[in-house]
Image 1 (cartoon, rainbow, N blue to C red):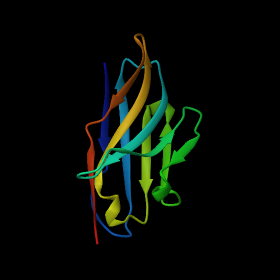
Image 2 (cartoon, rainbow, N blue to C red; image 1 turned 90 degrees about the vertical axis):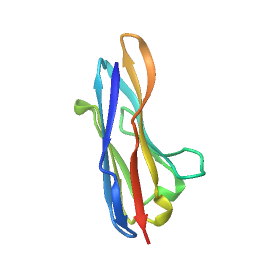
Image 3 (cartoon, helix red, strand yellow; image 1 turned 30 degrees about the horizontal axis):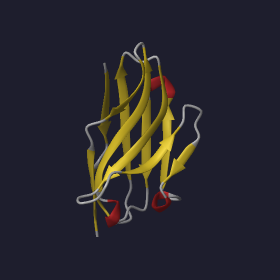
Image 4 (cartoon, helix red, strand yellow; image 1 turned 135 degrees about the vertical axis):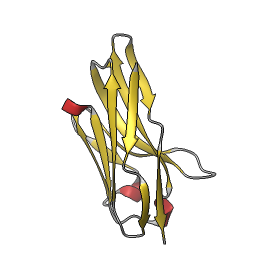
Length: 119
């Protein structure tokens, strides 16, 4: 019914930048919150950044000042601009969206995109 497709991951040196994108498609009436999570090997998945439909944003403490989340509601797309990347940011990054369709409100996940930061 709904698909989330992520792009923009890759390998970058410490101090570099990456911009992740996540586009939602399918039978969508509207999207409430959208966000980015990450999971490093051997660690639990954690919330990196989230934004409401109104544009309010929140960030993990380690990302404040370095990461910026934004969204284009017309395109059902959320972005994560990551600057000053550190090796500890290495993880698989997952997009999440709370989507309203004819079935009601459901939670969807992207397939994940690898971000690797070398020291």
